[in-house]
Image (cartoon, rainbow, N blue to C red; front, side, top):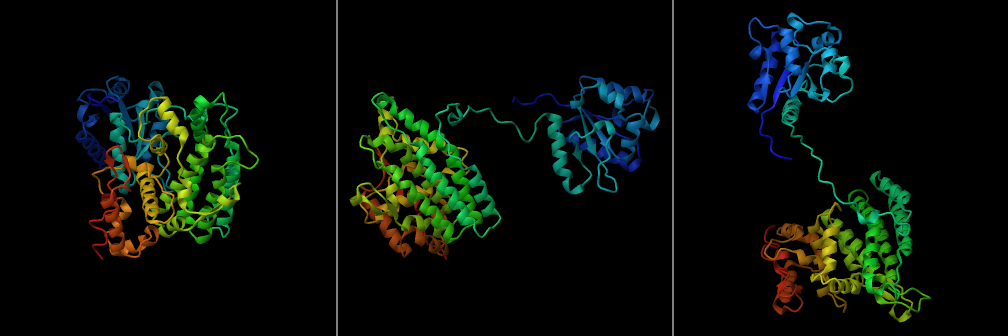
Length: 483
C-alpha cells in the first residue's frame, strides 16, 4: 500500500450536552490534530451568521471530508433518533435521513457513555456496526490509536499477499488421506483438559497415522523411473496435513500432558513407522528409492517431535528419544533388532537423482525441503536445527556405526552464536538439565568432546569448503561459566 500523503479531513458530529462534554470533544479534536488529522469542528469552523444545520449537512456531503465521527452520549443517541430538523443545540447531530444519504463507510460512532447496564448509547440507525469505544479511560489510548489509523486508512491488521494454492490441495482422486481427524481431536481435547487417559487417546491417534501410512506407498515402474522423484515429492506434499496434525499433538503433549506414558506412546509410534523404510514382506521386485517418501516423512516428523520438546525445555523427554533404542522388524530376521535413533536418517537417492536430472546444483535438496516446509509450521527453524545438531553430536559420540547427518545445519550461520539451549547453558544449573540429552556427565567432558571433533575435522559436517561451526553452535566459550 503506498504511503498516505494527503492529510485526512474529519468532521466531528456531537451533541451540545453540557460544557464538560463540549470540552471533552474539543480535547479529542486537538489530539487528532496532533496526529496530522485535519479536524472540522463547529467551534473552529462555523462562522458567525452561518446556519449551523447547513454547516453540518454540507460537511457530511463535502467530498473533501473523508471521515465523520459521531460522538455518542445519551443525549446524542436520543435526539439523533427523533430529530426532524435542526436548530440550536441539535444542529450538529446526524439524523437517520442524513446518515442514509451518504456513504455509510464514511461514518463511525465513537462511544462516549454507556447506560446503567453497560450498553453503549448508539443511534438506532447505527445498528450493529463496529464502533470505537472511548468510554473506558483504561482503554482510551488503545481506542484512540484505532481512530487515528481509521482516519489515515492505515489499519493495524492488513491482509497479507495471497499465496499460491498448496500443492497437496490439488484435486486429484489418487491423493491419499488418513481418516484421523476425529482421533486427533479427541487426543487434543484429552490433553488440554488433563484427562487421565490422554496418553491412551494420543496413542490411538498415532496408531491411526502409523497404520494409515500404508496408503502412501509408492513404487517405481519402468514407465515412471525417469521421473520417479516427482512421485516422491507429491507423496511428501500429500502427507503435509497429517504432519501438521502431528506437530499440534507433539506441542500439546509438551504443554499439557507431559508424562512418561505420553513420551512412550510417541516413541512407540516412531517404532511402528520403521517398517515403512524397508521392503515389505511378499514383495520381491523393488527399488530402494520406493521408500524414500517414508524416509523423508518419518525423519521430518521425528525432528519436529524432538525440536518441540527442546523448544519447551522438556529435555528429559528429548533425551528419551536419543537414549532409548527402537525395535525394527525386518523381513530378513538377521537384520531385525534394537536400533539407535540414527536408523531414522537414511540417504534419499530420489532427491540426489532429482538434483542431477534437473541440474539444480543444490548442496542438499533435503535441507532445502525441510527449510521450505518449515514455513507456517509453528516451530521455529532454529529449534529444528538444534534437534538436528544434538542428534549429530550424539551419533558422533556413540558406538553405533550409523551416523546422523544434520541436513538443516546447511542453513546454520557460520559466524552466529550458539543455539538457545546452549546459550542458556552458560548457567551451570541449566547445563545440569541438558546433561541427559547431551549424554555427558560434566561440562568439562562435553567441552573436551567438542574440542576433539573440531581438532580431527573429519567428523565436522561440511558442504564443499563450508564447515559447520560446531564449537560456536554449542557455545563452548561460555558453557557452564556461571552458577
